[in-house]
Length: 221
Image 1 (cartoon, rainbow, N blue to C red):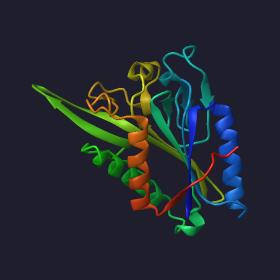
Image 2: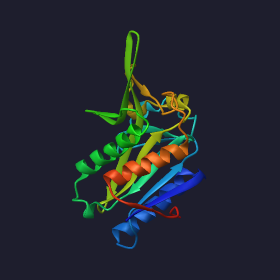
Image 3: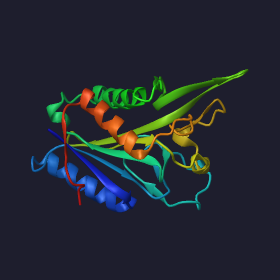
């Protein structure tokens, strides 16, 4: 059974990374079980292994952390549910492509619980929502995905926009995509009165449909 932990309040990024990496190492050593850890961070930017310095538009606005996850620049902050996914791919076919596709299915399933159609796009990582109005159309990202594997155990994970301050994304070029027809959105920005607890319930239900049963556990330390 997969552990499911939720931290109240805001968790500092550096402390979270230390705890996450320690848990992933314990999983690889067969000393701990798989875990999904849900939390929120204070406002900050992170840079994945593909990040370009030119995409950090406001380097002095929030703390910037260089990280070993996949992807480029992203924002974390209050109102965004971060889920760190520490899964043992040795037990899951050692198939990275399938694992990322399952993460996408997880997010899309959670969105469907709010009658939101999440979609994936070739060449654009994450989950996107089509938006249309009289004479205009665009696609906005509602969730980002960035994972890393060490000894076939995953860490880092997803960032799911519930009600973050979307203006904070203006300090970066999110995931390196700057075309005007692509932006960022959230459940509340789409007009849905969703709380973090609502989002957590949808994320857990969808996760169990994709990956299997979970059990409540304390957050890693």
